[in-house]
Image (cartoon, rainbow, N blue to C red; front, side, top):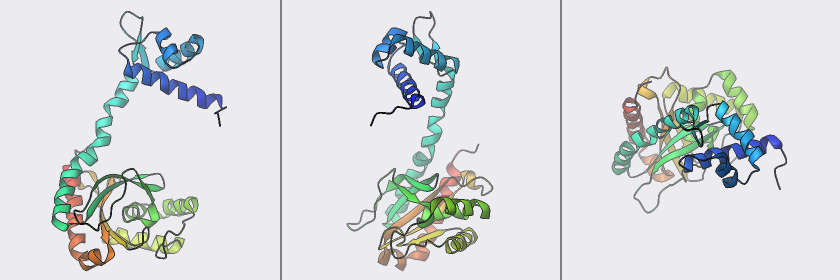
Length: 256
């Protein structure tokens, strides 16, 4: 179904213009209009707005448009977005080599956890989660780290917004029980997921703080996950090692 909202169309066209400029080596207004298939007058209006806001600017000589200072500042921040998985991966690989279970790095995105890095266990029977996959905060081991970092009011608001649903028979959906477990996770410093998202999979997660400064916002979580029988037999060992690796990652991240 076509998008009839003029604001949506203008936003989409503006992004297409920025993309075209980024792919080209300076484009004239006529070239931009042709590439994004817009009337020249419409392209001119959008380009003027983008230039006025600093996302585009005229190249020296004035005949073409290039990326502006505001867009370049945004692009300059991209390495920060990739710093965490880049720093964490070698340590995750060392951890997996030692414990032979899958290590997963996750960050919060709204009401979910998103997996941004993973090192799979070398074993034939293992747990694996697609990168970019989102899991609810309340039923994942990494997600529980984030609920534990919330104030009581923040957690109440989250649970009201989420309306927790059951994924397995082990999933906790009662708000009071979720709140109680969050306080327990905060006190003990790690979180467990005992088949609450996927039957037969147990995971243990440790928090990652930049510079290991727990006064900073929680940055991410690192978990070890695998078949319940294997993980449960080694839970104390895995807890100790995932906590140590999470601290190692945190201490390696550049302070800000």
